[in-house]
Length: 272
Image 1 (cartoon, rainbow, N blue to C red):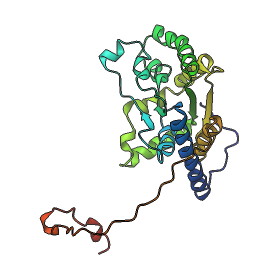
Image 2 (image 1 turned 180 degrees about the vertical axis):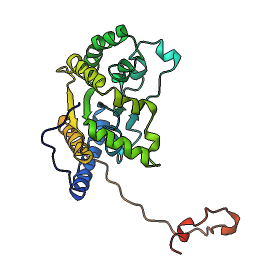
Image 3 (image 1 turned 90 degrees about the horizontal axis):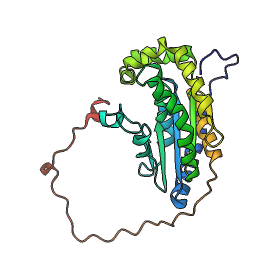
Image 4 (image 1 turned 90 degrees about the vertical axis):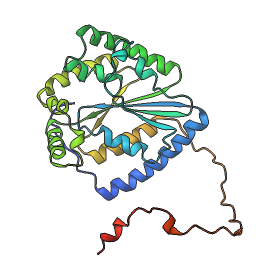
């Protein structure tokens, strides 16, 4: 979403953010155990402009979860074979089975955004997507999938600030692509595309939820709290686990250390 916001909320203090994030991540683990126990299927779609904060939020959601249960789905550019398939086909292959969570870092909505704006699909393909997408999502929900869709809304000024920061930080430079930078010159085109997408795909069975994301900490907390509130999970009784007593030694002796190659102690050089 574009635009200057009339009343910007104050930045969430780091200590408050970290305390609440830990609490929410503890709840996410409970959600994960409920998904496994109930055989539920949860799909969470993260969409928004480049540098809107999707990736950082996904990282916090998945941080303490079992990667065998909660998978991040970030698909590359489609192959020639995939381009010849039904558009939704390659996404269907990544939908969760019973007891799984799929976190889509961008999703089938690529066709409503970057593909449409940058001319990577035809007008007919774009219109077909807008017609088929609500049908596709109703089918998912009717089959029992819990579908949650979040649009991360960042202002033009904040997006540009984040782009500049990435350009200057060698550890974040990889996050930028020529396509990302070109999105600045297509800001209004992306705005119109998003508005059109919302009109067609904000349906009762699978509504869109907008996350104001100029403050990344606030956005992460708000999104995770909302998702947890939207799923009827409950505590699941876990098996009692107890460390067994260590048995007495049977005479094992470790081989001499000089028979193995060890990683140099680089850490020691930091305190010299």
